[in-house]
Length: 111
Length: 114
Image (cartoon, rainbow over all chains, first blue to last red; front, side, top):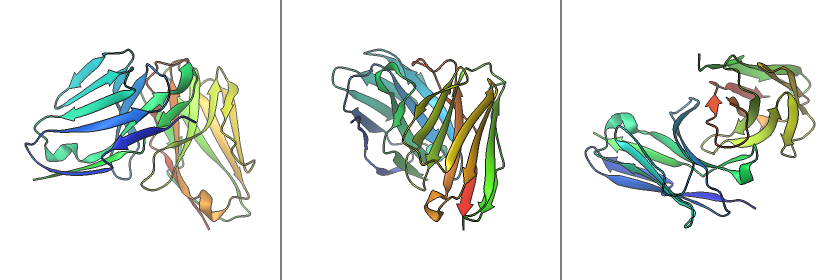
């Protein structure tokens, strides 16, 4: 059974600080996705990582993928309040149409 | 246009009712998805249609019945639901679903079953 786990589950951080969210998955996949979800809202795509060593950056967020370690990271640089949301990673299971989402990380950035 | 629309936004129904959720996209995507999301949980895949054919049914109870009338439209028919089916139902679409595709999500329908 494919498992996708994130840690931490909850993260409270001060503005201006850096932090990393980790996404581990249990089976071979070289495609990983990051999404953001604001409270009561739908999901917004942030990054698509399609190969080992892929790195994508947008603003204060940077995502990377290590398929050998089955690990993706989402690094937050100099956090601002607007980044407060829940972040999900998702794995494309075996190249099928099946996307399995991670447990989610609820991020709160304190002013 | 990168929008996926869903109607209604909110739905309250009794356990004996029949209702339908609707999802529409005009991005030319050939894969469409239904997810169920309970509060503070990740989305759970329910169904996937690829090229208007049902590709994945994640052992969803028969009280949920999907339908894909054409490549732009996806319905979810609801009948005899239980209170535990109350959740946010999200529709998504992607280019062709063969992997490596970004999914675009609709705003969701918040369903309450009384």
